[in-house]
Amino acid sequence: MANKMQKAVKEVVESNQIKLYADKIICHGNGEMTFKKCYFYRHGKTATDWMDRVVQELGDAGFQATRVSTEDAYAIWPKSSYFVARVRVNR
Image (cartoon, rainbow, N blue to C red; front, side, top):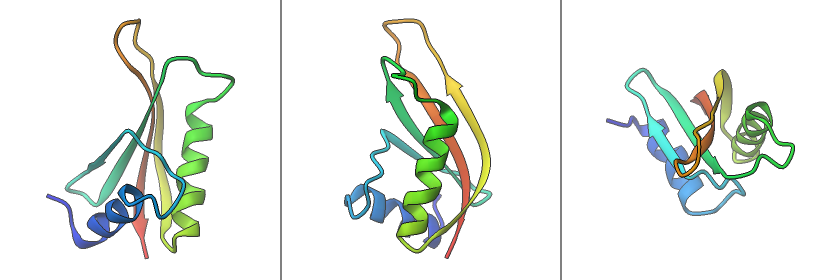
C-alpha cells in the first residue's frame, strides 16, 4: 500500500503536471517507487537516461528523488521491454 508521499508523487505524475510519461508506477512498502518506461527501439537511450529524467522531473515538481537502481529489462519481441528506474522520494 502506498504511503502519503508515494500517493502525492503518483498523483503529480499521472495528472501530467510534469513531463514524466511512465507506463507503470509501482509503490513499494519500503518507501521506494519504481517508474517503468516501455520501449520498442532504444533510439540511443539507456536506463540511465530514464533515471536522469525521473530524478530531474521529480525535482522540478518539488520532490527529492534518491537513486536506488536502474535496469534495462529487455525482452525479445513480442514482449515489452522497459527502462526501469527505482528511487526513494522525499519532499
